[in-house]
View 1 (cartoon, rainbow, N blue to C red):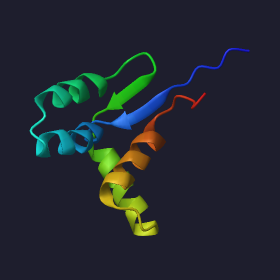
View 2 (tube, one colour):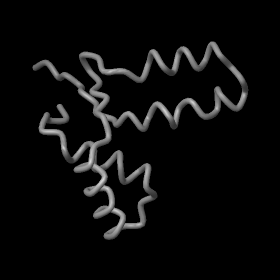
View 3 (cartoon, one colour):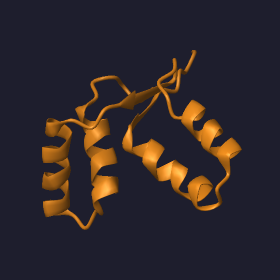
Length: 84
């Protein structure tokens, strides 16, 4: 049996991972982050759209999730691809 791992994240991830390299003024790490957070065979980087934002608001209304986490959850919930 062959297991293929596929991951989904929103484009919000790029803003999150760039914070520390930008605080440190680490241009090399910024380039690495920008190259890493992109869609590949095993990672889908999905734009944040209106539907995702509405779903994120609904998730926040029902849980104690912070907005970035709610956006990530809503992004994954909107995807139809199986996890494995």
